Length: 329
Ligand code: SF4
Ligand code: SF4
Ligand code: SF4
Picture 1 (tube, rainbow, N blue to C red):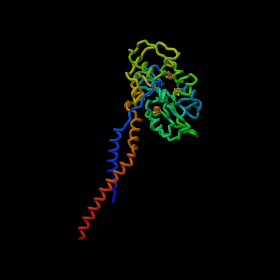
Picture 2 (cartoon, rainbow, N blue to C red):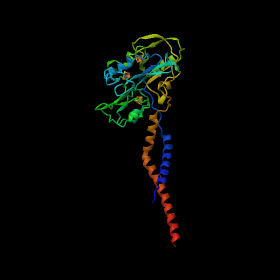
Picture 3 (cartoon, rainbow, N blue to C red):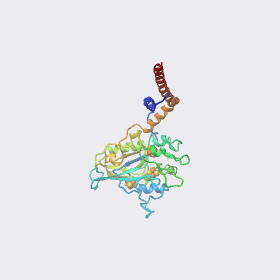
Picture 4 (cartoon, helix red, strand yellow):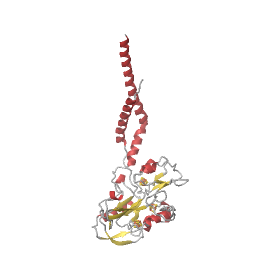
């Protein structure tokens, strides 16, 4: 039997098409958010870029500084999240950059940290359940004792959040866990606790969503009250004015939703948040895996395809033998 490379590739493509068709039928729906899920509302129009949240995050998570250079080892000036920075405030600027929350000749701030996805890719990709989504509060936690350092979560996260501590002798994955270690002591996310303007606000995600839509319904410049710290908690509110919001709550629908939701006056794609589908990547990739392995479908399909290719080649050989035999007579 002569299994040519061309025929093998043809067979593989046919098998792939079969599998793809099956996968479309088998993909699972997005997971849903627990009713008591906790999260953050980040309102870019209220952020003044003070970075108190960056410093507080480091303090409560015992994270070392990210120095500007080896010459100034104590100057903490992280440019991005990293193995030692879970939370960062980034700056958008355009042209003269002298008008806050304007797309042209303006500037705006954007928080970057784990969004605690409703249907997280990092949890789906982890082969040893070292990334876990809490079934009650929905916080996506990390278990360093279970982690084998494969970094699948790093590759899988659509927001580029988990970072591997390459510089450590015993590296771990680094990411925000919504300060879950502080909850038993009556505390909450340090970034929200210290935020002087309420730009980062902590609470139940359903309540934060209501607050976000209340703000979107305001007229730009309209006087209103902004809660600070923890929504529904004892923290104080203050009087301010509504921003010129883009009519979108980022994180409400993207990839099945996230437990950190965001408001801004500059379009989100300018703030590093590209448009994303509503279907979670985890639901798609798990659908593919389950289809491939359901009832050992993959080996069966491959075996079937190879059998067809082998049979066809055997028939060609028989035909060749017949014709060459006739020629000898
Ligand atoms: S503490 Fe609040 S206002 Fe200051 S940078 Fe962080 S989010 Fe913005
Ligand atoms: S943002 Fe990334 S690390 Fe955070 S929960 Fe979502 S997939 Fe996981
Ligand atoms: S919730 Fe805690 S760990 Fe997460 S960004 Fe805020 S301060 Fe950092």
